[in-house]
Image (cartoon, rainbow, N blue to C red; front, side, top):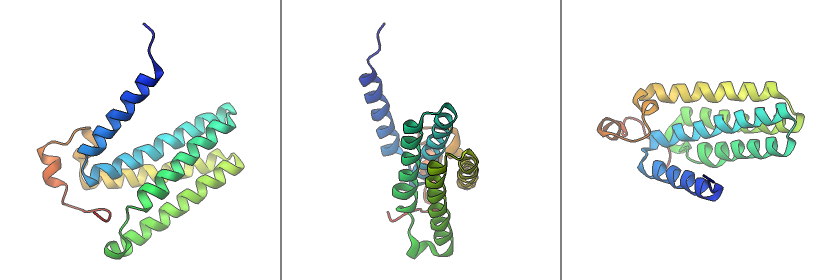
Length: 152
């Protein structure tokens, strides 16, 4: 059986769109962390293989998720010091990923990966049920208001 790559990509894109549409704000943040972590791991693989272009694309994606997802969704005005600290961590992480890309430095990737994993774990500790399912159930829907994130 020959599998059409476009069909697989379309399915993956549609599946992700459905997950995003059904996700609470809390789940969306976890999904953003998952995307950053996945992209950094892909970049590490390509760095180790000597695939410079692919490494660069993966790091560009990780930086975009941090800058356009995590940072932009922060509400600095309402979030106070916590939001300011997260903003600074995200800015630092994006800068470090840029440096890792320029220097081909795996240790910097490991540092940012560790930070993103710690932030993800902290976020999950607010509502551990988020990490156990890909679909919202009543408990997740009812707990979505525990902590708001972002401007919405």
